[in-house]
Length: 350
Image (cartoon, rainbow, N blue to C red; front, side, top):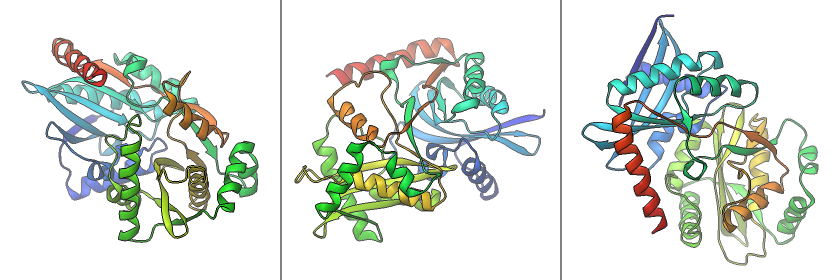
């Protein structure tokens, strides 16, 4: 192999087009590994994004969207959410080692990442992580879920619905009886309506971490570039909830779901998610990713409620790699990354 690597903050038109197509068409595609995600998410003064490309000769074999967090004296932390991306799992080790080596040469002292992989390719990528010196972060410091639920859509709607738990079907009937309807958003007024729901939901759910989530306009922009939809739930012409899903490879994944707190006896989350599944199926998606299930016992009441809600759709359990970390410059890692982790823990407990 003649492997070359490039890590930069900008891509020219041709390189950007190849990057986008490679990341989008991978069986391990993840929305966090798209340039569309970089454009949609909020940015901070200490963070920016870099784009990694790994080539064998003239053939692109791996990509990564790398979030760079500046630490001290030119050192920085690399975070690769659900990446790096490959098309062939057997090339993951080559791409991973190239990414780590290239980032270290540019001052990266610590790298944390978790590729989006499951099933028969999971052992291959897990072994590559171990061989490259990566180890899982402690459970209480995991920033991403390592287990999720998949509702399979590769069957008639009647079979999908019949596979739900009785509680889920009952809630869908109750929503219809209460006059709740769900439709696809059509314009700026609908986006603004969902933003109001998001703002109220965020204020009411202090235990639900929505940091890093794009605003409604950013989510819609992501949908326009990757595929997916914004759905709104209404009752008597008033928006009472919304749901956004995006496409990644041959599946759809829950990006956000927020509801108003007026008349909580009226179900709205259930019909929103069900309509999302129906629409994703029409788009050709074979699975609907519920974006996380707890590993073991739920950590708090909010997580328990979300888990109970998702379980009503009887998803298939899927295990993914947890976030792994590697010290690319051991001394700087020990001083800077560990200090950052302690600071964040103290701030969270305050």
